[in-house]
Image (cartoon, rainbow, N blue to C red; front, side):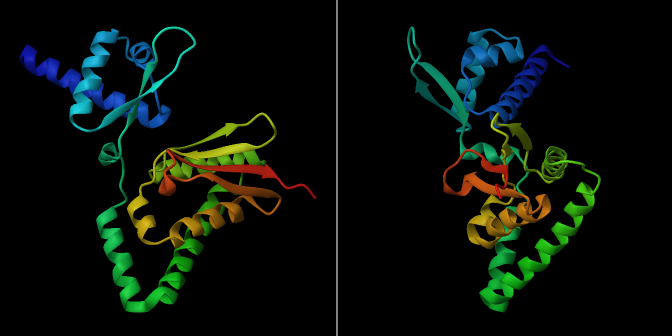
Amino acid sequence: MSGNQTNKDTSTKTRRGIIDLLKQQGGMDVNALSSEFFLSGMAIRQHLNALKEEGLVTYEEEARPMGRPAKLWRLTPEANRYFPSGYSELSVSLINSMREAFGNEGLDKLLAVRNKNMLDQYLLHLSDASDLRGKMEKLADIRTNEGYMAEVKDQGDGSLLFIEKHCPICEAAATCAGLCKNELNLFQTVLGNSVLVERVEHILVGGRNCVYRVSERIN
């Protein structure tokens, strides 16, 4: 393999790594990226500029206490093609066809069947979890395997955040609002009536992630 080909492969791998990291972490500056990839700031800027030319990243300036504002680099919607899409075009087409064939009422019945099947699978997977945190960690495992890049974070006030950094059914959900509604109901049912599940950030309405706050109900 030639030196040029090796350099090209290395650049491609690094740029994909940057895309993956920005998906996970959100906005990052050059210094943070440099420390993650053990590369100079100049090398990282070259990769970011190449990704920007492809329309995959953009930046916004953030004021800092001292010195010039820092550029925080983020992914654009175009970068979603690098992550699981859940066969979005086929899903949208099927939803439209089902709505045409069965009407909205029929589509709701089909979604109810889908939700029941998912509920059964999730409850089985969570059956040996002994507490709420354990249930949420197992739920995050399921959702990550389904392409949602999910994680659980403590809030310090007794509540937990359930964060999904990618939505593989985003286009389908935009076509059929029932998918998102059923998702919230699904989480509530799986985690039980002793907790309250609230959606506090939503990709479909401009959020970077879908985020749910889970807290113990106060009697």
